[in-house]
Length: 267
Image (cartoon, one colour):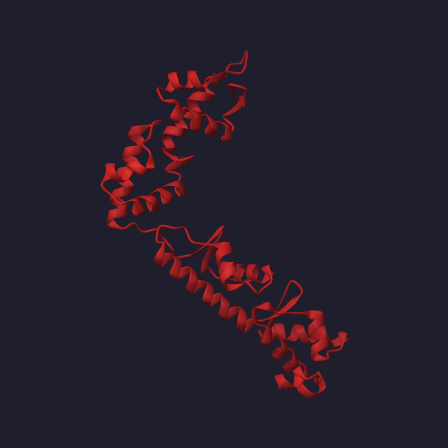
């Protein structure tokens, strides 16, 4: 029947519902624009909407952003998406999930972005995935290996003790007796958990930075805005220029201070 449609036979010979089903099915998740479907299936405009509605109610096809898409294809790609995310969790157990755009590029390259969004929405509503910038199984929980748990505890103690003068990340594996790769995974996880904060190439204990911001804000007076320069900052907090510059830039980004020439004004 599909071959007969391809050579131009109309819906009268193939059956309107079968014509639509076959034409939509051959497009997969790419779908077919409604106007093209009407032309290729030989449907009359005055009856097309009713037929499409009927097939959509039957669960055969689905309208998505001006396209008509095969529901079986949507179900199949949804299962492939879940399998991809499951595999990603197995490979990256400390990650919060697979990058959303990477999944779209791998599975939905030929589809309209609205089709990808519709599939994601269905999976979220079904309670199967959680979708933000990354896609994760709803059941996913970060599980640290014994070595990662040891590294996590040790690096948190190390950074808390270091305060505003943490060691370079490259030196931490030697201090903790661990390999760089698991340390990197643990640090990325701790950043997501807001336990530590990356400031340029440095990693700080989050509580140390919270204390810094609070102390800087307390410098402000009613009479005039408080200001601080690099030298004053170094002396006040007992840090070298190596730490003072990135910390002051961090305070600017956090809108605790604003740079004005060689000074920072406390906001």
